[in-house]
Image 1: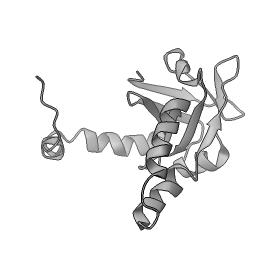
Image 2: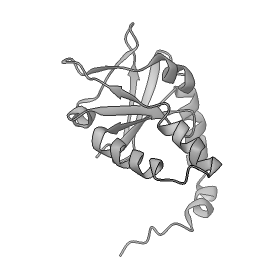
Image 3: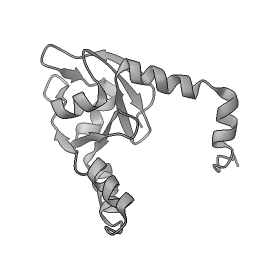
Length: 145
């Protein structure tokens, strides 16, 4: 599982050093694509293939389905990790997410997100609104048995 946050600096060639606990995601290959909040999503080969099948199975006559396919599949790139644990992020995706020297990795269980600090700060502000969170998440079935 990919949990927690990691604040990293990209090297001069814009490669990120993947934290040791996140490197297993790359064992069988990994993909990066655009996220929903001006961030990037990094998934293992298996998880990306499963999500790709779900997205590709949507009704292509539905305009929202086509938009989702373009967002996730049309922007996906396979990532390679080198022996030093470094990954080169595609420039086009870095530009989309506003990534520069500093990045933040945020674990999401089966995948992780890559954020620019300014964008993550905005997202964190939303998450810190505890009163709003109660209403936001009340309809989700998160009951402990």
